[in-house]
Image (cartoon, rainbow, N blue to C red; front, side, top):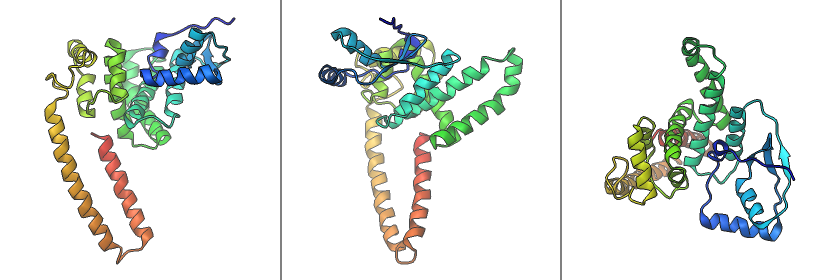
Length: 268
């Protein structure tokens, strides 16, 4: 039987399933078998960790397929793209993987430079073109890619202390704003460790950490009420505009407005 190796760096990129989801996958595999092949690179597992765990536990047969890559960073980018292709990711998870993609490409390209001086001279145009290209690939703005990179940096730092804390945020179990995540990206090791500990022991939302708290909830409620009033006013104005503009003109204007709102949302 082919020896399969596990790699913590690659596994670090993959979502951690909650107990209910894992149990559902386990029941499905026990009933139908492991239908999808596990993906390997040089006998290292790069996709299918949960299926592999269940198959080994119950002695289930499975198939494998091997892919070729030039480096570990290329493998990481494949894993990231493979995750993004999945349609059931949340917006936060999509931001995380887009940011990982950008940071991985930055690291891959930077690894070929012979000196820090040369890297510094070349970095700005290189990173700018990378951000623009990924913005086109993911159909978002260049600034969104840069913000996603900061978000990914914060979550990677948190995950190095506690993978469970990182995925608690990404799975929506722990609520945190993107603005507060930026603080983690530049935070000290002690601060990051404190946040990870608070998430792991369940005190993150009640203990004052500078990241989240009860005041955020009351502010959110007032903001929801304010935006609800704005939405009602906007809906009324649109009804009035129907008298003077065609449906196509209104749809075009609304689409521009929606795009602007999405850009504002991504910047928060």
